[in-house]
Length: 509
Ligand code: NG6
Ligand code: CA
Image (cartoon, rainbow, N blue to C red; front, side, top):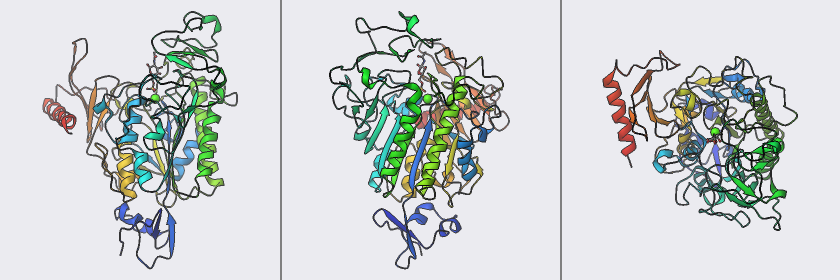
């Protein structure tokens, strides 16, 4: 008989194949204790979420790319499960990451792409994925892109910054504040800028430049890559960014080395915490702009810098997985690989992404890109590996979203933890059940929320800020995966029903 008992940070099962054989039972029951006659105990599984930045469904070979090969990420697919209907909540970064970490729809707090000097969006009293895991006995760390704000506004970058990720559930953080195209272009470790010289303090502003500081706009002669849109403010490493910054010379990052800085940090974290259950959120910076591959990858993809940094990201995944092997952690570590939003070619720099794209289809078979309220904006790769527990080389069509990670893992760990919108979809996440969510609210950039339910996707009619009415759109994804035929006028009832459903989810509190 299976009882539900957690023994410190250990769970016990009769033997390691029990979990597989008992696949039909709720996983929470499986992972729980097993009374007095246990033959051996097994540690709680480590959990790693690797999240790429702007990587599309069609950008990796295990999801059908033919113009680029991603053997590192493909290894995860070969040894695990590909979610074919996996989503981020939003077609941009900050909202999706907010949802993944809080289990709450991001539009409830008006989440939007944040500047690098924005205050922390996740309030200290909000439930979070890492807090839940801490409660279950995990060490929790984040390495890489943050983009959820830091401090309480008016951050002094020369002092300890709080709140940082360390105040909302992570014991350890080694991050960039926002994106690689936004200032401050420095790393922040546990709330402190890394390698800062106190005699060269950092100042940051998103409103005005600092006297005498060059900008991309005024000093194009200093640039080694030019903007195509925006990105004409302060310059770091010959690359113009969004926002103004002064000082901090010794702390500035070198874009071409960033892959290694974060990879080494991720490995270090795992090494340091291998004795206890750990959670690592490894947030890759690729293939977001500016795309500056290390010399190891430059020119290797034939798709230009965008393809090259995808190869770089793939290398990071591969090296990280090899390191888990080396430390003997592969078997007891759940690894999820995913992305924060759909792909984009030209995202503000002249980096040949469009010119060199050739026949590559970054969004796979889907319509739309990053920022768009279509499948291409928010259906992303989601690969889950747990050796021995998830059948290798399988796929699932269950509707599932990153907003479900926190409540799903809470169920797996038998921890009771309330979140607002995420659902316990652990059986779908691990491939034990073909059923996923009944519906999911998704968002483009701005105010266009949309609803996916069954075979249908509906973007209700809405009014833009300028007062223009955008007509409702309705697509049958089963027959029209590329969303080419708007069926709204043919099925007004369906539109009405889905619009009301969306309204009622919005109103839920
Ligand atoms: C946009 C930027 C884009 C990118 C995006 C955020 C311009 C013209 N475009 O405003 O380059 O930084 O914000 O991307 O500035 S995200 O993946 O972090 O959401
Ligand atoms: Ca992104």
